[in-house]
Every structure is written in structure tokens, then in C-alpha cells.
Length: 438
Image (cartoon, rainbow, N blue to C red):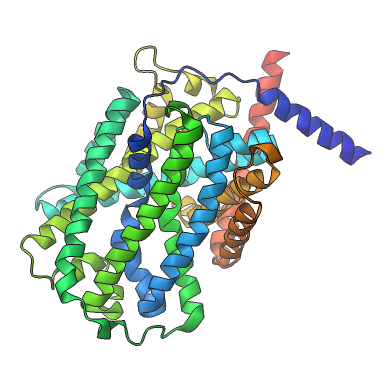
């Protein structure tokens, strides 16, 4: 009886939350813009750095791990796509958790997203400064990181259309640099460098696939901007799938050329595997072009993070899970300007004083929890709203949970601690809000 009452109360709370208005954000992003946001989030440090780490744990067989990671990401992507088609609002999985599952699970997704992406934003900003300093001697990495955060914050502030165009420019430069890398590396490809193919067996391949999965997870940034996409029911699912398919193919082509050009051992021995491979290629300017591509990739990730964080803050403030000031929409630019300013300010502070290691170490766990909730929500959707068979979210959920338990114990405990902290914060926020409305 108590269980039935609890379920009824939860269902009533979710139904009540569904009536919240969509807000005043402007639908200015088309299919190309949405794909650009996804690619900007996915084609970042992963392709320039993680390929070397994956080669170290699996040898050339990390290419198989890449496709396994792509399949897992596709299952998660399809779950997010059908949810976004039915609930095209800001907040992504935070919103789906609220409307389909339970407000507490929705909050968990939103909280984990904010914690991991804000901390990662500081890391990415510092990474951009480091790459730029390598390109232009004499540049101070910290000052470059701060300038990048300020510039991108202003680009966000003055409208989603301007931010979308800037993002397309940044992503275009990154893609051109990677295509040049592929063309430059083809003459140096030697299949003999793919042997021994799997020195660490299936264990190494599984570990590589887990590492590479995290490189694909940025596609969900498209769903987080649900209220700013034109014709979201068609555009968001298409954009997610185009982003994932093109990203997997690009990662595979780059990785194959790199390992065939210098071998897995060389890739795994450096923090800049593509740079190491490019140094052996003969086309002119290849090292400079790869350096520019790596720099713009970091800039693109930072821009997409500012977009996603500010919209998540907006969605959570609208449901009273964050202070109401973050719900404000700029009357002229039609963007959640207070969320943009706050997220930019936090990233700037992290660039100056350093990232919070506790949160950074929990990032892998928080991402997997976020996608687990998305898959659960896809499984619980009404039958008439589902676009795909339940096998898709079930597979996505199983892969997320399998990767979660494979993480280091310290990472898991950090993630759980961060979640508990967030739930306590929500409880406090709810009590404060209820006391004011009495």
C-alpha cells in the first residue's frame, strides 16, 4: 500500500512538472547547425589524444574497440534521439528523467552533467591554452585559456545563431586538418605495422572500447539545446545520427592511417599521437595543420560545453532545482544569459586556479550515469512514442553499466559521493522553495 502511494505521488509530481512552459528561447538552429554542435563536442581531445592511449592498451586491435565503442554510442544515441523527438526541450536527459521516470532521477542526470562539464570546461580551456602556446611561442597558456573562455562566453551571450555560425567555422577548420592528415598519411601506410594485431587479446580490446566510448559522448549536446532547434522532432534525431556516423567514420580513418603510418607502439609512447604520426608524413605543413586542428578542436569543445551547461542551468532553474535567476532569458538575444555568464565565470576561475580533481576523477562515472538514465527513460516511454525497439535502450543500458563497474573503485566512489552531495543540495533547495511558497 505504501509503495502504491509513493508511486502515485511520484507520477503526480511528474505530471505536474510537464505543464511547465517552454520559455522564450529562439529556435534558430537548423540541421547543419545542430550537426556542427554535435561534431564540435565529439571531435575534440579524444581523436588527438585518446587514440594513443587506446593503442597502448590494445595494440592495433584498438580499431575493433573503436567500432565497439561506436555501436555502444549509437545505441545510446538512438535512445536520446527518440526521447528528444518526443520531449524537445532544453536540458536533455535531465528533462527526460523528469517527464518519464522520476524528478529525483532527472535531477541526478542534470547535476552530474553540470558537475562533470563545468570541471571539464576548465580542463579544456587550459588544454586550448597549452596547444596555442605550442603553436605560437611566447603565448601564456593561462591568459590564452581565459581569453578563449571570455570570447566564447560573449559569442554565446549575443545569440544562438551567432554561436552556431562560429561553431561551424571552428568545426570546419578541425575537419579540414584531419582530412589533410588522412591524405598525407595514405602514402606512408604499411599493413605490416598492424602486426601483432591484438597483443593483449579481448581484454585489451574491451578496455580500449571503454576509453574510446567517452570520446563519442558529446553528441548529446544537441538534445540539451532542444528548445533552440528548428523542427526539433525531425532535426534532433537526424543530427544525432549524422554526428555519430560521421564521427565513427572519421575516427576510424584517422586511427587507421595513424597506426598504419607509425605503428601502435609509437602512438602509445606520446601525448600527441597524431603529431608523432604526422612528423613522418611528407606533405608540406602537416605538423602546423595538425597543431591548428588540435587547437580549434579544443575551442570547439569549450564552445559546445558553454552552450550545454548554460541550457542545463536554465532547464534546472525552471524546475526550481537551481536558483530562479538562472531561468532568465535575455529580452533581445533570446538566450539564458545568466546561465551563460555564470558558466563562463566558473570556467575562467578553474582556468586560473586549477580544476577540482575530485570532480575530474568522477567524470567517467557521471557520464555513464547520465546515459544510463537516458536509456531507462527510453525504455519507459509510451509505446506510441517509441521510434525503435526496446533492444536499443536495453543494449545501451547494459553497456553503460558494464563500463561503470569496470572503472577504478576510486572513480566510482567519487561519482557516488558527488551524486549524494547533489541530492542533498536538491533536498535543501526544495525545502527553501516550499517554505517561501507557504
